[in-house]
Amino acid sequence: MTISMVPGQVIQEQGTNDLVGALQNVPGVYAFTNYGIYEVWLEGKTPYAFDDPKFVQAGNTKKVVSIPRATGPIKIDGTTQNWPGIPPEIISGKRLVFGSNADGSEGTFKLCWDDQHLYILATVIDSTPMMSKVAPERLWAGDGLELFLGSEKLDEGGQLLFTDRHLMVGAPGSGTAPFFYSHSPQPYECEALVIPGGDGKSYTLEMAIPWEALGIKPQVATEFLFDLAINDSSNGTSRRAQLMWNGTDKNSGDRTHWGRAKLLP
Image (cartoon, rainbow, N blue to C red; front, side):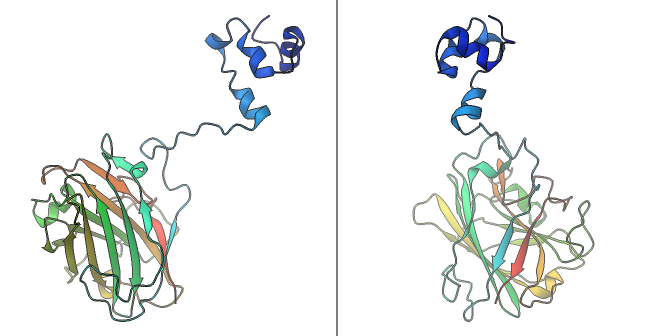
């Protein structure tokens, strides 16, 4: 018998209706072909999928995050008072786009809005939390978040537009969080706060970004490009890993794979 035999010949010569079992008895099958493909074809076995975002092109489908309106005034204090009761978006360790491994890092985030601000509430699981000892323009190298937002030409990829925004927020410890606009015509105020987790392995970061800084006039059904990265450092001066909600580690210079956001009532 040779590997070129069709499945029917294999069954006939082996005298069985068990094709997979018959193939295991064929000399050389293990060496030259993957008989497991028949389990997929004939028995409904789920095919193996390799979905590591570092090796699979990201952004083939853009995720869309819904942003409901705040139910009342939002105070930047790490609590969920007047936040709409929606489940958070999850950024798991599988969304590693930079570094050799996530080492248990992951996070969640929620968004809401009012007429003045876009609000972000993120919780990060980190084995060495709040390690950030860098200057504002290098906040990407320490623990914290990066935000990517675009208000124009939502279907156009490539280099960042003049109106796109890239905002970095650091998590150096409990209290006011430093921030830096790396792609903006001028600095804007941004209220941000870091709250350590009680377990010593996490932190929460809440912030309010004025719509003026984003060049967006908020109203129900407004859509814009959006992405969020979690940066992880073990020493506070160099980035060990980066997780990305939708895009890639090239987000700071290429908007092609940013996700989207939509304002809800």
